[in-house]
Length: 487
Image 1 (tube, rainbow, N blue to C red):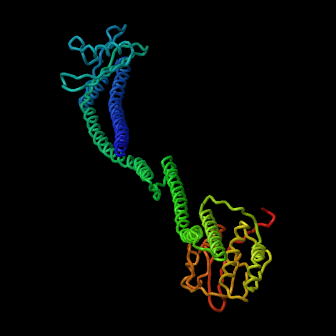
Image 2: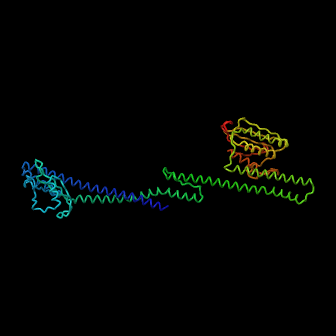
Image 3: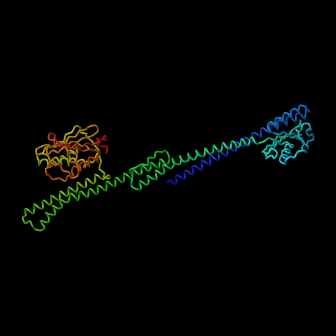
């Protein structure tokens, strides 16, 4: 990408330096034209003034007065290093009298160009030219203007010749100054081109580097470019692309991890029941058991192990589905009280076998949340089954539902085995069983299923346990503002 920086720098530098040189050349040419033009105007005005005075003097025959004037003009010309020559027009009907002229053409070696502008003046035209004069050894400007009589007839011409040396020096001085300014301007232009090139190319280089990072699989960074132009828009698009790719990668990793966890859990947890089932089956097949009652007991154990495997696989499938971001629930507005009562009715037979009492209490009969009825009911079933399994016979299982600052809470409590406080945060881990579970059967996945369901509803679940209050599982769900008939 450094090549593009060099190219942009060269483009910027060439354009700016060329522009600087062009402006310098234009100003130099303009100044030169202005200096030469000003001097031409001065000589022309002098020639016109002399011509007017000569014309008036020739009409009034003021020879004495004009002689004094001519002396003064020649002195002025000498002071300005200029020559003022007055010619008579030989082609005029009444040419300018010799007393009003100061040159004799026949005695002068008049150059061709000077002859041309004199002839033009005799024809009533004002002309000028500049050439290198061998006598003065410098560039001279020559201006010729006609002299008119009272009848507007051209009776003569005035030729003013002035040196261009001072003007040429001024032009050269200005050129040196302009070269200096152009040099400084060119240096500044190169510096500015360097700065602008870096400012322009730096985001392009960063975007290229960031594209390389994305290609390498690193989606965690950003371009860090904040601009309000096309490059800024491109950088925003690259940042958004990286974010989406990162989300896609996390999603893929999550799905892959869920798949690995599922197969690992299945293989790990099914190993024991499969081994036990195979052992009983092998014993029966080999004919080692002749007692019919014993055979029936073995078959019942095989049946129990199959039931355990069926429940284990079902729980693992539920966990795998709940952890999948694409898993969709049948969301509707539900009353948490009705769900708890429905779950408790389904377990009353088990409660009766253990002589347990049960009740659902609530503070507000409209404890509404947005959720999947069957999944929330499954959470209550898991918590109540655990309560039935671990509570003492003759005690009570109680569900209490109440509201608190925009949330709906449900507490499922029982009195039985106490969970040590240092294990409260671990009871929701896969296959974890509290040290006080007393060897009771269970897959260790029920609370994991419950936790996943609650969290998919935007809620939380926790546990506390002591001798006085018993074991209490608390679920917290966001309260919905929608009516139960709106969905």
